[in-house]
Length: 78
Image 1 (cartoon, rainbow, N blue to C red):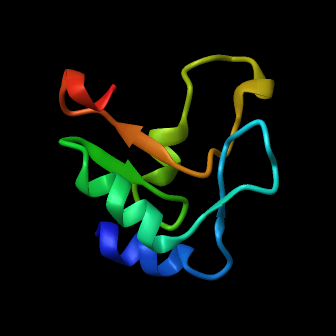
Image 2: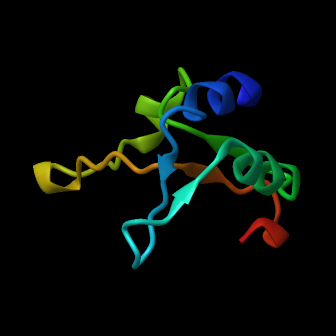
C-alpha cells in the first residue's frame, strides 16, 4: 500500500510541512523515511488518509490536509 501511495505522490512532489514552503519530498525521500519507521506512513493517495487525518473536534478550522501522516509504531518513531 505504501508503494502505491509513493507512486501516486511522485508527480507532483508532495509538499513538506516545514517553515520553508518551497521544500518538497520526493518518492525516494518518502521511501527512505518509511523504511526507518516501525509505524506506517499515510499519504493523501492512501485509502486510509481521510480517516487518519480526522481530528475529533467540532471546530471546522481543524479540517487539515497534511502532506504526510505518520502512525508511530514504537517510541523510536517519535
